[in-house]
Length: 430
Image (cartoon, rainbow, N blue to C red; front, side, top):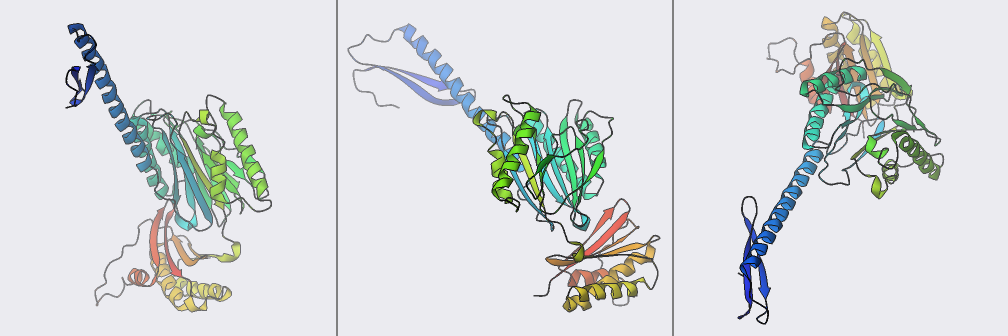
């Protein structure tokens, strides 16, 4: 206990929290002061009770803030993918008022054919429930992206999922798919603030995307638009916490964001501003009094894949197609000075094309992409995915994928709404 000098008058009051004693309060009077009365004991007890409850509440609140913040952060991606043809950067800021956990999220999901899905969303409300619903919607969006559904379909299914989660589960979401080969982007919006595009010359524009109803309203159709995504341009997706606050309405904020992008681009002249500093500049828009909501930001710098690095063919599904595919691949590799890869590519292309033509009814596609790796994609109209299996010594077939698995740096198969794509990658010769 506390050491008290002899002769001093002392009251010791325990601090009782909701579940345990968390300490003690000591009241001391010098020997020359009047002794404590029974009334003083009552005051000391009341002070101790109020203090204990206050401390207890602060501890609980601190723990809740920590849990809410951790919940939110664990549901956001640890790191962004690094797909070919686009550079990505992101930021997340929790609301300035602690324990107001938000439902903001962002995602970048690589898709077949070097495309990438870019997602940003915001569950309405600020609670643990908002964060939990955000986690469910984010997982659903990832699953739907993996099925390679068109953006408006993804929003339609998210809308259905939100309604399954409860009647008042509302969220806004923007879903875009960038194709670096076509230099195009397809965007669909569910009640979310519109994306901004910073062009290479420094002009920033608010993209005209039909606003759509929020997710969870139910029974509404979403609309997708296809827009140019020129190399060197930067797409900025964000949540309303960046542009809307008690100090300004959403459209004023969007205009300020557009001006901020233009001003930042002016500093680097004809070259696009570096992506990470650009994100920091954008967040600097927020004054200290502005942060009454959390903020998620996803920036994509389009680099694209040049047409000279792509070879693409439609081939009829016939027995002799594999031989034709080998010759076409050989010619493309010769044009790219990649003769060292010819033997491996011919062998693997032959195996994958042979598998594709076996059951295909419509023409198959063969695409070669030259980036930091050589990528080959073969598409057909048969949805069944090939499976790697060990062929027995007496088997005639069944070794094709085994070869691909042994020789390719990476390989995979993706089901599409129209069939599937089997792809493999080979490292460039050093």
